[in-house]
Structure formats: C-alpha cells, structure tokens
Amino acid sequence: MADERTHHVPVMVGEVGALLEPARGGVFVDGTVGLGGHARMLLDDGADRLIGLDRDPDALQAARAALQRFGDRVTLVHADYRALGAVLDAQRVDVVDGIVLDLGVSSLQLDAGGRGFSFRRDEPLDMRMDQSQGATAAERLAAVDESELADVIYRFGEERKSRRVARAIVRAREDAPIERTGQLAAIVRRAVGGPWQRIDPATRTFQALRIWVNGELDGLDAALDGAVSRLRAAAGPGGGRLAVISFHSLEDRVIKHAFRGMASGDRPRVRLLTKRPIGAGAGEVAANPRARSAKLRGVERLAA
Ligand SMILES: C[S@@+](CC[C@H](N)C(=O)[O-])C[C@H]1O[C@@H](n2cnc3c(N)ncnc32)[C@H](O)[C@@H]1O
Image (cartoon, rainbow, N blue to C red):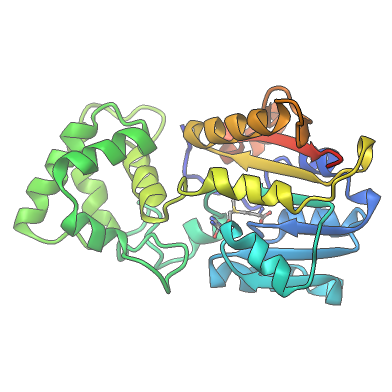
C-alpha cells in the first residue's frame, strides 16, 4: 500500500537509467516530468534532447528551474502523457529513443499547500493535478452515490472497510458539505476505527479519491500502446525503450498485461526488458519510504 510520505529524490533513478541507456544518445521523453529528477539523469547521462510533459503547471515550473542548465536541449509542455502523440507531432518529432513514465503524485504536490492531496494539513479538498480541468474532490464527494463511492474506495484504496467509510461520508455530508481535508480525514479515521497501525487510516481513502478525481487508470493501456508506437523501431539493441514506474497494484497489472500483449503473438512489437517488475533496493526504501511500493517495468521496440 502506498504511503503518502514524500520523496524529494526520483525513485529508482539508477534502474531507469539502466533500462533506457541514455548514453546511446537521441531524443528522450519524460511523460511525467514532475520535479525533473529522472529528466536530469537522462540529460546528464547522454540524452541529446528531452521533451518533458506534465499535466500540473506547478510541476512544470519546478522542472523548468531544475533543468534550466540544460538550455535548449529541454522542451517542457503542459500536457497529459495520454496526448503524447499530439505533443510529438507539434514538436515535429516522429520517433524517440526512450520514454519514462513515473506515475502518481510528486512530493511537490503532496507538500505544497493548498492542493488538497494530503491529510497532514487542513486545506481545501481539491486533489486535481491539473486545476484548470474537471471537478474537485469536494465537488465529486457532494454528488457521488454511496455504492459508487464504496467501490472507488475499495478498488483504488484497497480499503477493506470501504462500505463503512462510504456510509460515514454520505452521512456526514447530510449535515455539512465536506470541503476540507481535515474534515474528511476525521470522518475516515472515525469510520475505520481501531488503533492506528503503521499508517494513518485516512491514507487509503485519500489515495483512492486522488486516483478517482484524476482518472489515473483511465486510458493507461492506450497510452502505453501509443508510447510504444512512437519508439524507434530497430532490430537488436537499437530499438527505443519505454520504462514505467507504478505505485499501485491496479496500475502494475495494466502495465504487465499491455507489455505482455505487445511482446507476444506472431509479430511482437516489443521485447520485455523486465520479466518481473523491478523494485527499489533496501537502501533506497530505507531512505525514501515512497519507494517501497514502486514497481518498474520496461520494453524495447523491435523492428517493424
Ligand atoms: C511521481 S511524479 C514524477 C516525479 C519525476 N519523475 C521526478 O523525477 O521528479 C508524477 C508526476 O506526473 C504528473 N502526472 C500524473 N499523471 C499525469 C498525466 N496523465 N499526464 C502528465 N503528467 C501526469 C504529476 O502531475 C506529477 O508531477
């Protein structure tokens, strides 16, 4: 289960570098550029050019500062990685040599005040990565029906007491709209009950609502397919490579099936670079608790 403690260093940066081999040079894409940690590694280690996408304008600003020293080798675009094809078309880039996706939220989003991702501070319950689009968590909680909410909390949060939490939220909103993280956290903690174990009982429900509000699993499968179609096709080790880090078992399942599907059949499009997902090493997990649930998978594009 994901812990919402934050990370200031990119997760599994060495492992991503080993899969993507930026020393081969060429054009690389970071579809979730965030604070620019993976992007910096790719540029330092040999990528000629990096195109970085993020749906959060605040993240792009942070990435711009972090990557400033690379000058015009970097292009940053406010976009969803699910629109990667359109972004590359607009940049007049046909194929690329490597793509990294590091899914989920960044430490900036968790730590910066006012975004509503964290139950550690009392603030407006927004949770949107792109605040220019869609309904906030507060607006969604005001409208959702109890059974759908229970389903969301169970699937995306793996919360065994999802029905109880959903019922408590629906009861509470009859008294007053739920508009603050502190209010929601108190309702969830009361509903889950019992002594706290290792993590705050609100963690699972907050994670579930974040995934739901941002539609994080929607179109992931198609996005992976689209990303592979823009990788350089080559025989042998010259093909473009895609590396994906996920933090949730549902995401990892989608990635595993997508990669296996593309790697099988009469005319496989890719070769698996990871038969099983790579996890973070013990040292990294000790230094960065968020790395505990990270799983990395990669593929290499084969000749068409
Ligand atoms: C875990 S952070 C990435 C951290 C980054 N790898 C680094 O080294 O700093 C995930 C980032 O992906 C962004 N993101 C999440 N879903 C996205 C999507 N569908 N399209 C583009 N960016 C997305 C988030 O806004 C966040 O900044």
